[in-house]
Length: 233
Image 1 (cartoon, rainbow, N blue to C red):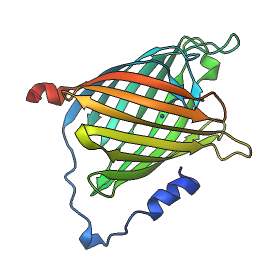
Image 2 (image 1 turned 120 degrees about the vertical axis):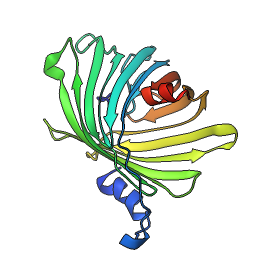
Image 3 (image 1 turned 180 degrees about the vertical axis):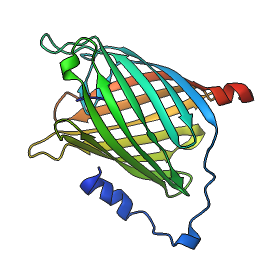
């Protein structure tokens, strides 16, 4: 959820092309979540990188979010410190977002809208519609696509994504994205992560693009939900 900051059209179509087509009577029944929940989280990262570009001049960032959900619907707010250059140098980015996350068997979808707000530079605020899809081919491997469309200037960005389960509860994930412009932007990242005690996650990731030098980023994040606290998990 970031600016030049989180491959439809052509790339997303590759993900869907690889997805098996099910007849109506072969689709698994999905239990739709109905309860209300609130999730909160905080992350400490060595560099805030979005779409191949550092948002903190290669310096650390502290990020956090609060998200409320009911059934497949959700709304939330996410924030991070930022640092750019002398002309464009907001101290903070705040993202307001909301949407739905329906699931159909092994297919997970996410449709929504995000408004990006820079308190020091309100003229630079903008919004994006987004659509995401991920298909779990096995318990170990999933493939997906993400598409973002700015509503004010019609800019595009899209990713092809993948996630692979590794031994010892590690997970590999990566993505490659583009803005579809001639001589446009291309960015990719790949890394491994592991969650401990259901709340703490360590992520070690390599980023590269044709816009910014390659960089290695380490992130420690903590996530909790109201439902997990009430269940004692």
